[in-house]
Length: 221
Image (tube, rainbow, N blue to C red):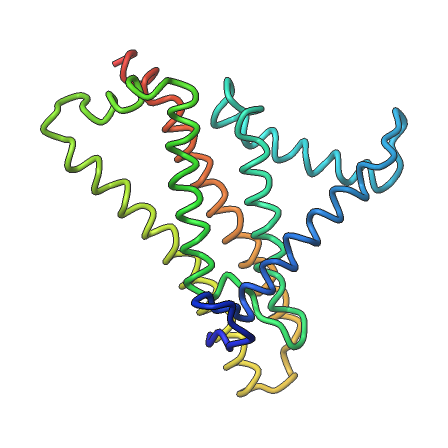
């Protein structure tokens, strides 16, 4: 979708997708602040819902990285929550999902790219982390480097392509069928949006877990 120009700050163009992204981040921050203001031992309805979401995310992360779940939990949980809201934003009249903009999905993929290396270096140390690029054979170094960039590119394009095609398909069906089938299209949009958020977040989790545990995996081989 076209990202209409809203205004510019010098060389930086502030478009609709960027403003929507900021709005979603502010919304998540407000929800997190409001839902944790008054925590009780006997949780109410809101606290029960929040605890259930956090527990589900924690369980998914622990299944992939059991020894480092607490370390990467804030980042992965933030990615998942952002993508769920962002992907569903297209259902609001007058708005479109920021994830159908390649610049947004590229930014998310780059964030995952640098975060994976940061967590890997923080956990193993710079020397040990860089050493895994030379295993099992130093001749594979170029392939390791290429794979780092190709998977980041694939991460960005996969989410962008799926979300853009989803919104275009829904628009075309509505143009052809009118409002004869709005509910099935709405349900399809919701399901696909949740699936794409889950896939992106799970791939990010796997990349981070792989970076953190790379030295352990190499030592066990």
